[in-house]
Structure formats: structure tokens, C-alpha cells
Image (tube, rainbow, N blue to C red; front, side, top):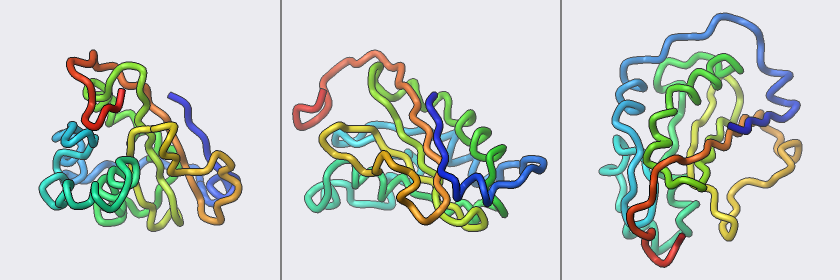
Length: 161
């Protein structure tokens, strides 16, 4: 895992005991992530969106970032600090069994620490979604790139490898 934060994150992040995850959040994580129409989406959120229609309006990375988005305060997170970020990332470990080996799942936690937003999407070189210079963002931002480890059985939709 490669993790990065910007200076705003460091300024806002405190040192305290990590909060427990809510049962609702744990249920979303437990359902995992899977592939639909060449998109890697959080299984618990998939039925809430018309992925076919969204795919006609945005690139795959944009669709994933839109669909795979959670306002963490809705799940009992009062402050999103370093301990919570790393614990959240660790809880997603089994998701990497669904991501093709050699591909990376990017996790972004952004916004004020009191109302952080979690997003995740597959990194695609031809579809950048986040600039490399994290300091260019005014809001606090935490980014982790996680390596997929699933053996690929078939090519992704639309010729993606």
C-alpha cells in the first residue's frame, strides 16, 4: 500500500483512540466490491445506480468515484483522523481479491475531518481523477493505492486490460 496525505490533513488530524466502525458501515464493507460492466463498484451500492446510463455520461473512473462514495459522518464517524483512515483501509483488504493482479484500487478520503467523504475507484492511466500534487487541494486529503491480487479470468469490458 502506498498512502499519502497533504499538509491540511496533518494540521487537522489529531491523536486519539480510533472510533469503532458502525454496524451499517461494516455491512457495506462485508458485501465487498465486484465488477459490473467493466466497473468495480461497492456491492452494497450497486443497485442504487443505473450503471449503464452513468457509463454513457462519464468515463469508468468517474462512474466508480461517483457510485463508490460515502459520507462517513452518516456511519457514525465523528472525525476522520489517521487511525480511522488506516483502520478503514485495513478493513478493505479482502476487496483486493476482486481487483485484478497488477491493477490498483485507489481510496480517497477527503474533506473536513468532521465530514469526510470516502471514495474508491480503479486507477486508469488514461482516466486520471485526482491530481498528483495533493497540496493543490484546499481540503484535507488522504490517498491510499492498494494492489489488486485477483487472477484475471477474462478481459474487462470495452477492451480494457
